[in-house]
Length: 236
Image 1 (cartoon, rainbow, N blue to C red):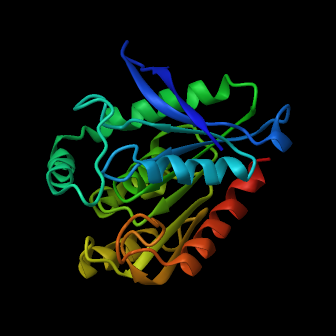
Image 2 (cartoon, rainbow, N blue to C red):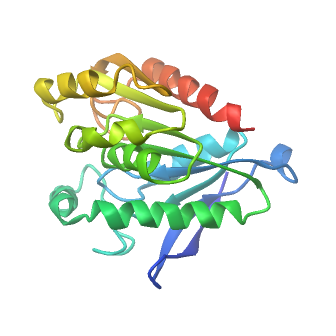
């Protein structure tokens, strides 16, 4: 299902690109929830576009914004590109999380204005994007969120109490990018907060990404997406 890159206006006068999947024929003319897919640290990669297509095939109106546009617009790295991977990881300390969340809010505004969106907005993010999805649930007026192995969630645990929308976490039991002590802090701070559900999976980081060598676990990825879809479908 081919998509296209479109321009989104930012809250502070700039513009950034976002990938918009084509809607399947069976959903044309229908209005469904808007879903924002937030990238891993490697940019809007072919996999980010493909997982956006996967969500669109479920009936959602989807956008995947370029979260690096303030650093290097349209950056994307593949896992066999050592220089690109190193550069991507070097972007992590440069990201302004406050501005990034506001850019997600701008993407939400763009989605709400689309004919295929019913006005409800969900955010799903992976790795870096998982942290931004969590912050979006805490700070933005959205209707649901899915946090896939967010690597910096533990740095913002005081914001968990602000989350009012249904939010599902997908965490790997063997995540080399999140310390066990940080995982315990996440559980301690967030378990028991209304609207938050935390699922754990007997696998490692990046288990939903079929382009990550040695990481992908199809069975567990499918289970995680089923749980996300069950949450997002309530917005239909």
